[in-house]
Image (cartoon, rainbow, N blue to C red; front, side, top):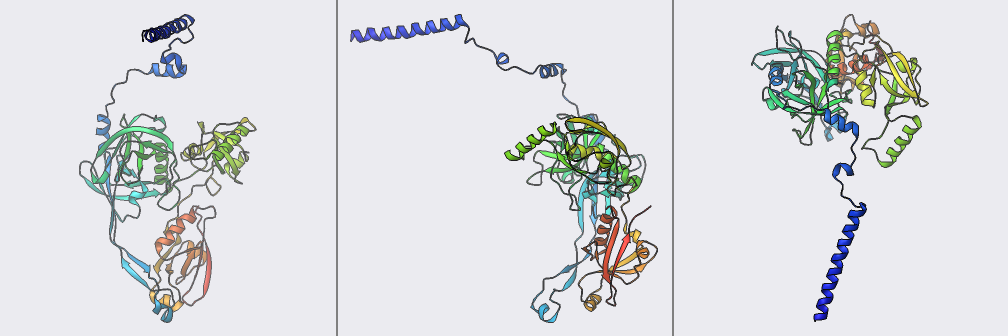
Amino acid sequence: MTTKKYLGIAALALVACGGVSIATYALNSGEKEDKNFTEMFTQNEQSVKAASAISNVQPVDLTQAADVSVHAVVHIKATQRSRTQTVQEMPDIFDFFFGDGRGQQRQIQTQPRVGFGSGVIISDDGYIVTNSHVVEGADEITVRLNDEREFKGRVIGADAATDLALVKIEGKNFPTLPVGDSDALKVGEWVLAVGNPFNLNSTVTAGIVSAKARSISSTASDGKTVAIQSFIQTDAAINQGNSGGALVNSKGQLVGINAMLYSPTGAYSGYGFAIPTTIMKKVVADIKTYGSVQRAVLGIAGRSIGTDITMDDQQAEQMKKQAEELGVTDGVYVAEVTDGGAAAAAGMKKDDVIVELGGKKVKNFNDLQEILSTHRPGDKVTVKYIRDKKEHSANLTLKNSQGNTKVTKSADIDILGAAFRPLPDDLKQQLGINYGLQVTGVSNGKMKDAGITKGFIILKANGTSVKTTDDLETILKEASNSPEQVLFMSGMYPSGKRANFAVDLSQE
């Protein structure tokens, strides 16, 4: 027992001595010397200098910005009156045996609809900018100011593609919100969202700019993709009723028009999106001056260079390979050049990569869209592009979608110079049709020029069925902004005679 005890003590002594000797070796050799965090992880010198250059930041005081903005942000109530609507009923067995097998039509009275939103006064004589979807289809608009005064508003014009509208109230010396430069915004900068969420008048929420030039999948009220894919993203709370309200910087300047929120529930869940003022200023100026937005196009089909997190591994690898072959890391790849367009006239070709337009860098397709949205047809700009891994530049004149530099006007139904009525039931039964829009009178206008006379029943316009005046007006506006500017009408007269007409919509 004594021997085992001594052996155990000896073993412990050896281990201890060994530990001392190892520790002594490490200290003497210096091979395992402890290092601090900075020595183990080397920082980028430029980043360190940038951080050191930041002065002592004081808490941001947003009270003055809030006080200025609440007086210029208004509550908008949009009312759509009750309307008579024709609906098609499902056919029953009696329709098959005693009717035409298509079911009966009947008229119903729709309920009045009321919507609420916000707007921003941008001139002291009562011009207000808001979202197009706030005032869409409204028969009556009521505007209430922060001081509880109410005014009747009228829509000067609206553009569904950018979701912007211009409204006018009558009066003078209204409070306004100074318009700032949204391009100067920085990610992380404090902003206020001012509006009337849930009819809570003059509500102010604060947050930061979370991202710029944000592209999201959104659809305009006309069913088409929203033309603006360069939103300001913010975490300032934006809820229903905030639409058309103001995004304001800490200086009390308008930098965006709040447009939508991103939420699985329909209520605020962290992110909202605003239309930059660089786009807003041009759109509302066009609406006031021309009655419609003058859109400049480059005349190309393209896409962004580079990868994003939505791509799978195979797509990402293909994009990386193409970028290496083209000698670029970002920009817009030109997949197609439209004949007669601005890019073709400047000598651009397929496989070119646009890297700058009008003195502004182009990193992706969203950047290109935002730059173009601030220009009009006829503007002269310089484009820089990469071809064969070399940079080239060219001067070009931007054009409209019709391939020229003329001012385009969205045609109103008055341009047709005709009066209409939905086809009465007795005439439908007589002719064996279940819809149509009849011309009840023709005066000087586009329809008379095309040879259309009183009594003509419009069945289709540009291949789309026409049942109401609203249907015709929608088709007319789309056709007036197309390159052809022609409305092809097909239909018949009460005698049963079929007829087709081409109505020229071009305006000098």
